[in-house]
Length: 195
Ligand code: GAR
Image (cartoon, rainbow, N blue to C red; front, side, top):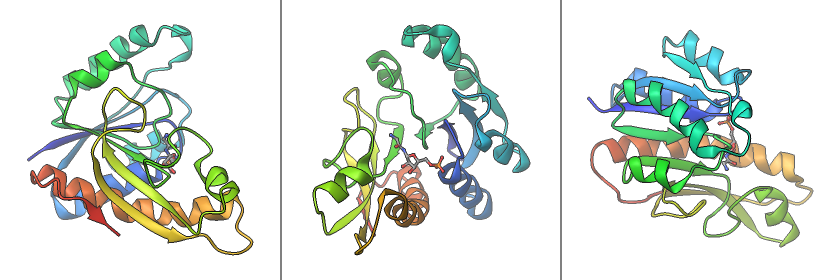
């Protein structure tokens, strides 16, 4: 069975959806949840599900991303993942790290890429007057929020939306999309999932 490691930085609602669906359906095995923030709420949630966790605080490394990644790599490689999922992981990874997991690292991003890479995606969609918003799961390449698209889910932008209401609507679709993509991906199927 394919082994999946997940990187988080915060609440980990996408991570939990991945873990729960893997455990319920057995399509893959969650082998490690790692966070760059030792206080990330997702770490405790993963532990409750019986998934090993590790925190590697990025802050002592300052601007030295490669040194942080070298530290993160140790538990990650020890877990021998076939697939690495970024799920609300808010650190930019160096090309060296990305290349190591080339073709087997996925990310979920809260916009309809190629629109709005980077931060504040929901506010940017609102400011642009977009009629719809959504989320994307893509393969990670050295270019931020780029890489082949493996799935997208769309939601309407409703009158009166602010960034928070729109984010909540998109997040419910993230929870559908990411497991659907991962299921296909571990089966070797890269046909985009469209929800
Ligand atoms: C999600 O909306 C995810 O798409 C976003 O952070 C949130 C994490 O929520 N990711 C990014 O913005 C990555 N650049 P979660 O911790 O509850 O899964």
